[in-house]
Length: 231
Ligand code: CDP
Image (cartoon, rainbow, N blue to C red):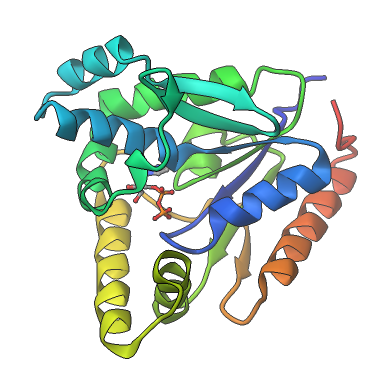
């Protein structure tokens, strides 16, 4: 088979990409990989050792064994021989990751690892910011997930704190907007919608509806292109 076995799901922060992509992968019998987790892993290493230069960050990341490991249907980052979660979800990593993601050698380092995973024997549901535009421009299914900043802020707070209260909501929506602006305005592989991506606005959708919408788009795209959904 010559098709790139990748379903690309891109979109702004907290648009529900990762959790939805994981459920889509399970439904399709595919692997799921959240590319943002690798940028977060590099950011963790940079912060731990107070490093700013790309080469030094890569060197230290490799010494500490930052890499991807298949665990069930998930492909997750490991660091120091253990799953890198939850260390990579700390607020300080979230605040600093945009700087790491703007550095070209670090993007190349991540992309080499993503491409290696796509040369396997199962479909890969891959979520990020530049999967359909830069990493796998030939992916047969490209989805761009969006939601209003307010809806995304609410989901992030409920996920993190169990509730979305008014004072935190405005601050979270502003923080998300700032991260979107940083991701969309960087010189290398900025966040943008691929011209051939299908946009799904999830503002009014439940989680289950989101998963079903992506599955419907993926199945239709694969059948239009006469690609079997398994390798
Ligand atoms: O979960 P959330 O949407 O907040 O972010 P993430 O997917 O964990 O990604 C963290 C950061 O990594 C993003 O804000 C981007 O700066 C960067 N990223 C990227 O540049 N390219 C990707 N393919 C994935 C993430």
